[in-house]
Image (cartoon, rainbow, N blue to C red; front, top):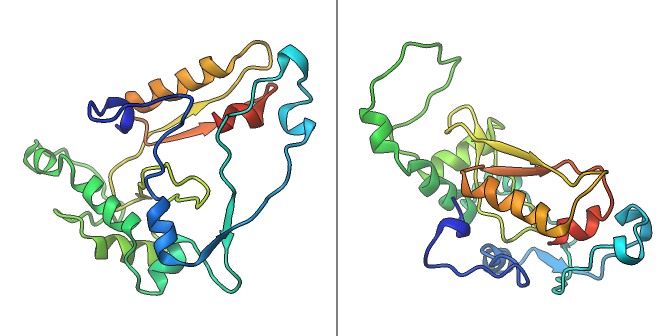
Length: 203
């Protein structure tokens, strides 16, 4: 369930997670960095003084598609390109599949699902190209491990977290995220309503 349960990886909250997909993005040659915009007071709910959460120390320049390029997994899939993200997804989908195949089967309605015994990168690409699955892979979050959502793939678990309008801190919000990932959440959605939303999300 990610780096927080991998004994071979040391995590440091001050450095953030490793940028797993950074080299993949660079190798495709279709993105460029730019300055972006400065953080405005309203981005952090006008928090100030002691109430303002300190900024994350590391600043990475945001990325965008080069002129005339589309940098989504859907665009690559429809162009017939198998990306490293699709290969990663295939490996992830096959984890534990042998156990599932030998487990007792339950009667139920398939609703048109056709899940193969072994998921290949080409199967992943085809399902994405057909619009039957998505790979959430924002180019500005290269630390994220690719995963896929679609009816012909394993069920995914989303964890909703968010800082409170009453009381919250950066450390508490990071701890919520870590525990969600540690216990197997595939995705984490921030539904914050309080102050410091921008700065806490950077952490």
